[in-house]
Amino acid sequence: METIKMTQNEQGFTSGEVERAVSIQKQLAQNLIQVTQEYKIDLLAVQEVKWIGRNTIEKKDCRIYYSCDDKQYIFRTGFTLSKCWRSREIDFKPTDSRTYVLRIRGKFKN
Image (cartoon, rainbow, N blue to C red; front, side):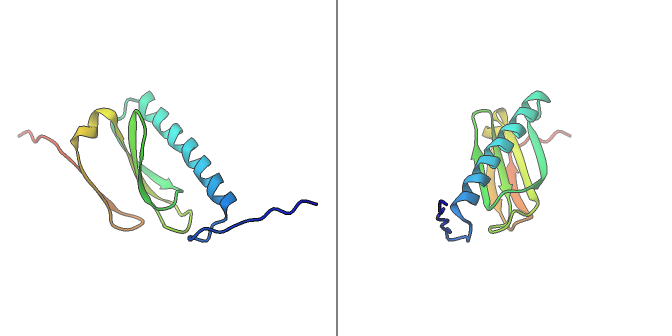
């Protein structure tokens, strides 16, 4: 019988859990990018994101912002911003696990 040693990181997750979560996160990010490209969506609000932490994922075709709980895979929120809108981005500030500020430059028409 083989013994597998499981180590915990500072957030309390085992290395196997972290590797699995990162793998799932990459797959979900790729699916999200495919959907935004298929429907030609420049800015998309996403609900029920099951990731950990508050961060930005940089991809070639878009940028994904998310704000989630630091220790649990709890349903939270995110945004995708297409490549053509990256120059309009001013700021991204996560405030808590449910809300954040994504400031985008725009032109007003009267």
